[in-house]
Image 1: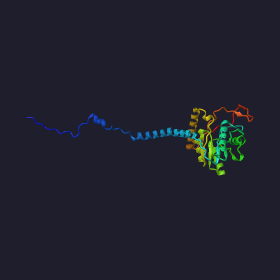
Image 2: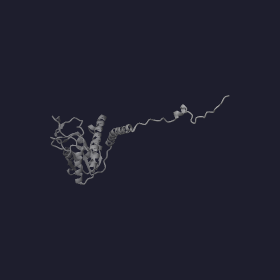
Image 3: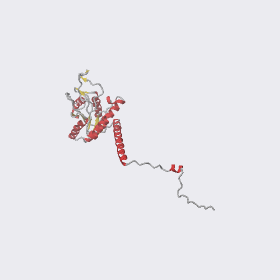
Image 4: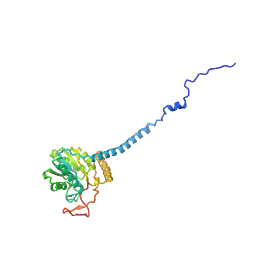
Amino acid sequence: MTLEVDLPEPEHEETTAEERADRPRERRRRPLWVTVPLSVVLGLLAIAVLTPLTVGARIWYQARQDERPRSDAIIVLGAAQYNGVPSPTLKWRLQHALKLYRDGVAPAIVTVGGKAPGDDYTEAGTGRAWLIKEGGVPASKVFAVPDGRDTLASLKAVGAEFDRHHWSSAVIVTDPWHGLRSKKMAGDQGIEAAVSPTRSGPSVQTRDTQFNYIVRETGGYLSYVLLGKSVQVPDETIKRIRIDPSGTPSPPPSPSGSPTR
């Protein structure tokens, strides 16, 4: 005689391979002592990479703007001068400022810049003399601020000059890549600044040169914003010569004159 016993069926049948595949895989969680430092490092790395790229993009964008609203004065930032004669870079800036003045952008021009050790002339004085003699601007409309060996020091002196005249707005004339930094510095001196850059000179000759200037200005802008310091742009990339006022250029034994900023 055989005794048959019904075994109870299991409540949960074994899942098939397909069902197991449909279930989300369980991931092993990293411990916090790994996750937190890793997140911090990745965040800092992202900031270190994205911040310069963002600033560089802003410099590139500003360089392509030509802002010329009606203002109280036109500011010509300093560049090298040779024994009282504007260097090509300074002359391009002066010519551009003269055009803005003749177009009625502002009723006054402010030239800026001190002098290098051993120089007899300042950048500001050289620029003012050129605008009066060569540009025909009335002497009462051109103001020289012969202070500063870098952009920040010069614009601090310009801020004091603006306060003296009760001016509040300006159009800055400088190289394209220098526009963002100079505009920021002027704004911090209480000047409502716009920038109308020159389109000639060594800083715009080739794409490689433009890239190098953007890199330098990115460092300069971050140095000012983060540390409150101004950096000096390297000397002009064109060959330096001493210009004889008589019109005959001759190479100097040891070139003098302040570098482009």
